[in-house]
Image 1 (cartoon, one colour):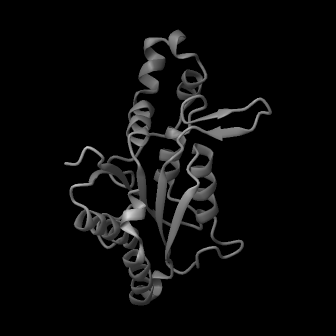
Image 2 (cartoon, one colour):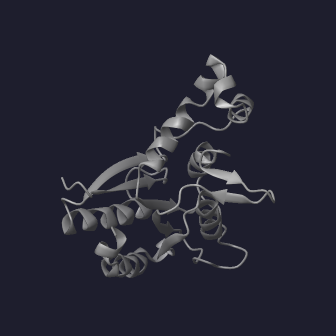
Amino acid sequence: MSATARTILHISSSARSTGSASRALSQALVDRVKAHAPERVVVRDRDVGGERAPSHVTEAWIGASFTPEENRTAAQREALKESDALIDELKGSDVLVIGAAMYNFSVTATLKAYFDQVARAGVTFKYNDQGVPEGLLTNKKAYVVVSSGGVPMNAPGMDFLTPHVKTFLGLLGISDVTFIDATGQMKREDANESATAVINAIDIDAMLA
């Protein structure tokens, strides 16, 4: 393995373990990277859509997250244990590949739970002197495969997933985001062919730069 290997965090969010377009296409991108540069990449998989779905934020979690680390009780440290692990994994990645299935016009509940777990003031973002949030996870890239049954990507008043993901990643400081359109799965062959063409056109060397 090269000393300059880049780490890809592959996040899957569909509740479907098989037959999921977002899973298959995001995996296709990861496989293409591994085939192109096997010695330059480490892949870590985070399946938030299945049995490893993140916990929802609780009152105990909120209290612990806003308590200075040195003042946290053992119970508060335990409340943030899952969040800490997910954040460490995220911080250790260079590129995110997210399979984002659209459920009822937005992200899945499990992907939202993941976002909530890794959004920590003072850890992944901070508030500046004007009270405006600034991301702390800069110098990362993200590639997001968006799938839906029929809602087109960026459709006004319908696609709340794409702006949600873009805004959330921006909160963390990740502004280099590429969206891959796999919407319209009611006509799966056409949607997948179009998305695959985009995936095959991605400059892998630039992706890993």
